[in-house]
Length: 126
Image (tube, rainbow, N blue to C red):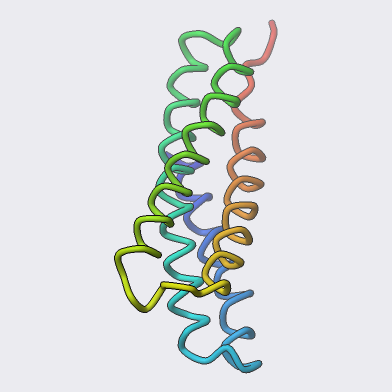
């Protein structure tokens, strides 16, 4: 649970660090809306795969590589699927390249945070 809280805090801090200056530099409210949506889309699977990995490594530490690769595949499928649905179904997001750029930025940010936290899950050898 501590790692999930660190992921939440790190993601929100980086969102504030990136989105607020983007709003002030001419992105307006759209920068906050697109970045917030991108953060939420990327955040949900990151928490899920982090929880899956932490539980799985306690039982089967030899499957760490499979969990990381499987989690990455699930994350990509979820993020791209939800983002595509939003961009097709919600008129505000249609044709907005800015939304896809924010999605890429927050995908990479949450991926880096999650991988860093997963590396701390590695079991120690006695």
